[in-house]
Every structure is written in C-alpha cells, then in structure tokens.
Image (tube, rainbow, N blue to C red):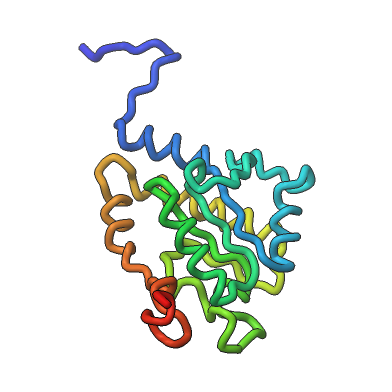
Length: 184
C-alpha cells in the first residue's frame, strides 16, 4: 500500500530545496563604473521587472549580497577595491561580467584598464555588448539561476569551487615600483 499524501505536501531533497531557494532570491550588488551601469539601472526599472527573477533588491553592502554585477570598465586602481568587495561577500557567491569593457577591456586597450576581470576573480556569466541590452542581463540571470539549481548547495560543490577560485591576484601589496615603496 502506497502512502497517500495530501495535495498541499511536497516531498523533495533538501539540496534541491536549498538550491531552489537560493536561485530565486539572488541579492545583486552592482559595481557599475560606466555606461553599462545605466543599462543595469534600466534592468532594475519597471519595464524589465527584475523582481520576476527574485533579484530586485540591489544591495550596496557586500555582506548582504551574493551576486556581483561588474558593469563597465575597471581601471587598475579600482581593482584592489573590487577584489576586497568580492572577498567580503558571503559564500556561495556569483559574478556577472556585464559589457565588453568588464569582460575584455573593450575599446580601452591600455595599461590602465583591466583587460577582463576574469583574470583577477572568478566570473560565472558574461554579458556581451557595448553596452548590452537589459534583456541580455536578464538572460544571464536566468542562465545563472539554472546553473545554481543544477549545481546544488548543501553538498559543498559551490563552496569547494569558491575555495579553488580564491587565488586572487593581490595588487594592493605592490605599487608601481614594488612592495617596498608603500612602506616609505
């Protein structure tokens, strides 16, 4: 005899439930430095309704966020700030690189602009374009939600991945003339 459950009872694995909760309650932290930041603001507006995906509450504190959206170009002097903010975010955390400048440096092929933030921190999703449309960012969030749902949370897969990707380049320890100049 099979046990009959009421219609309002759902049976699932705890890992699947935790992944479902996590994917539907992303708390993004914008790191917007250029024109991609305007498109990021447009994505949060009522026309595109970011609230449908559980990511409407933009947080400006890294300790309250689990998704960093790097939108626009990142200069070398801002890179230590970006890395510090990334390290202050709680695990598990994800990163979206929005726009050509954040992903590859864009048209700014100079020594002062980072030629892709993925060289210095782990990136989960890339949004191409200059600047990308809000629909493209929404698709990246949907793809990230699928990745979170399939990846699991309680088995430690995300935590293990985060620990492997902790090897960040520390640019704050050395200035243009080496680490000894900061001590003077």
